Image (cartoon, rainbow, N blue to C red; front, side, top):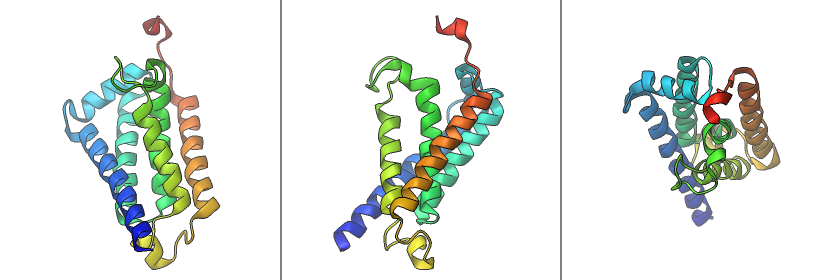
Length: 170
């Protein structure tokens, strides 16, 4: 049992660190939030500033939830949702491999798969979810919540706000 608890903890913390770093970089790195907003607007997310903040805060919040093992399926939904939007708006057109020009989708797909799996496995015994009895055991409800909320949120966001410049793509 200790090996599986440790494995879940490693997966949870690994995803958390990636997402906290990603959100932090969007807000404070490189071009800061203004640069992130320009990039998002260039991808067709309108308005760019709103989506830069939405994605960044979702990444930071989902990362924090995963780090704590608190409301883990909701944290997983945040990972799945933000990566699904990235998949559609930026990565899918570049093919599978991330080392290709424009960056392919293997990285975002891997993060979505890991988050879906963690949603179904649950946060493990070394988590706040376990301590307070939330999502215990996670199973199908946790998996379903993570995947449906993540992909559903991404679909609604894309339908409402993604307006790619078709001329720029030609």
